[in-house]
Image 1 (cartoon, rainbow, N blue to C red):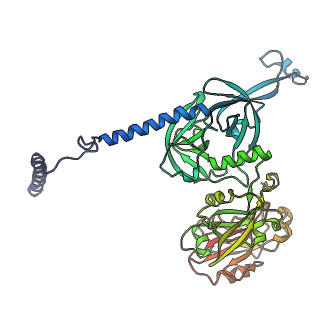
Image 2: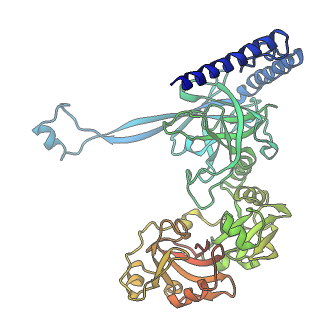
Image 3: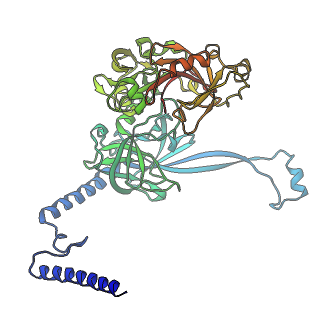
Length: 516
């Protein structure tokens, strides 16, 4: 017990000596205590004060010069309802009145948003969802002038719309170049959130090239949004996102929030894309979208490794997006599913949004060059761009996959975590499997901890071919798949051509890494 007290006393003496030592050193100015807010360190130089003042002046200039070109948009949609007459209290008379012909009454549905003027004679950019299905559109300027607007054109795929008012010498917003915008740069959002007209908020560009995971839907949905932490709320939609020079670089379009209100993440459509859509809507009444005729995705680590790339980069060609596939410009040029596009027009394509930006600088009918990696071999192709097919023809079926029939030949392959069996006549009939896909292997089970999880789907994916490692070969029986996998070890890659039941369109390429 005495020994423990002596150790305690020694520890206290040691701490006390350390504290007195610090105080002594501080008195001699040998050292000083450091705090998160230090009196001397908190001083700001006159040059820093000037810099902050200049930044503040820039925000003031943006508010003064850009806000007059921003407009408040009120929309009205007339809905026709059938209403019952008589007492509001239900009773036997009300029951019989339900069988009578009741007069129809019209109820207006009102909404609001934002836009900005891009020409002195009254063309205005806004969001498609702001004016979609509106029977009446009214525009109000900062100076309180109001105009009834005409919808010139809408593009649901990009959520861009063009409306016009009859005016002269209207204030115009200057359009910038979002390609030169950098993450971390100051931006300002101007709009009419929550009924608070002409509100200015500031923040930075948080990220570029953001996808929104199907928020708009459609085969040609953009994956190239500008993310900002400038406060954006309902009512901001269609308003400008402005850089520190007062140039519009985006159209505020969406927020990421569990409540529907500002939570630190807003998204804007790049203005270069919006301008192209606007020009097409004004000139042609529709968007003439250039495409190469393939469905694409960001290359994964497995895709890049299979392609022979040292870095995880590039855009994977999953399948052809044209029906029939022979009409696909990429297919005509020689590009195949499983290829990884690494450059377009000589410019690196590190991700889908980058490739989209390059392609949309061209018009349908123009020719582009593409560099691709095909399982270790670099190839070059010239593709004549086509105009995007009618969206209505591209809608995928949502019919659920038919249940599989019992097959004695089902076999499990733990190397990639699946079980397969030949496509049965029962499945062909129930799922209406098209003729070219009736001779593959149906995936009957997927191990949720296996390599194929989320890439192949139980009762929904048919393995048609192996295209890597070569040579390309068809899969008809479990023995065919065994002959491929038996030669592969842990970490090796195998690339399949697969067909997903319930989905219209051609098969896709998918790469799976072999597990242990």
